[in-house]
Image: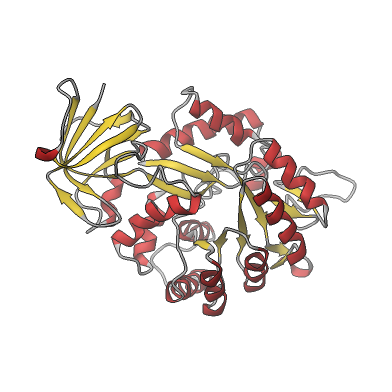
Length: 401
């Protein structure tokens, strides 16, 4: 049965707010949108009135870890070394539902952190309708250089499972191929990390190793995301041709100019940086710690360089279902609300190379979210979700208020 959705306004992130519009859905696709009196609506169509609500495309978060639990509730080490994988999967199903109900209909999940390829199984369970959740693009295990990741601090005679897949040299080709064979949609590499003397953030893989990973991934039809927080790590990742760079905590104008020149998108993960600062004692009111001051400077440098900024929160470091915090911080750090919404819709869809999501137009997947108020004027309106549709299926429809 066709569905005609009648909100107070439709927000098209590529243009503006449209009052008096409706959206016609048939099965899993949008078939028409525009002024309600100009639409041809089948007589048997189900009508959904969303008075006082703004309808916008389903939101997209490009950096999530469904198999991680907030660190103030369970340490990363305990999750990787102590918690049963089945327990972590059970938590992830709750996280997926919370994320969907918060209006995020698509996630890119960037690493299972010790849970193997469990993200592939969760993706399949969502696709088969066994559990509710966003559509997923998954990366299985992140790829790290030997001796650079964790858990750490154990006797050398103890073989400790790692939170990612270790490799070095030309062996990285086989690792990438293995991950693609096991179901990875994206390849996640760590271009830098805290390791070596003093465990300071520094590059891990050489540019040649990263280029092998990128070339192999692209040959297999996969894109590559690089964890890179240092200037040198970002430079190596960009030189190797990755598709997105995550974090960029100490990025400068020069390095972001390089990203812009090479068409590499940037996911700043502001919400994770804020959460970690709070875990370390910052109360959110006192002057920001140096890590957040540097993060603001990095974000401004990216803006000044006109880098493509896509929404990616690193949810899992903080609570799933609170993904909108990243959009609030994008605005707090200098974006307009509409720019932040674009980062989580049209731009995120372009970054995924998926033309079927992130927009309200005929032919697009019927991923639709309704919120109270106007999020283009006040980004916090995205916290008041009343309606969620993913692929034409209604997952949330609150009673009229």
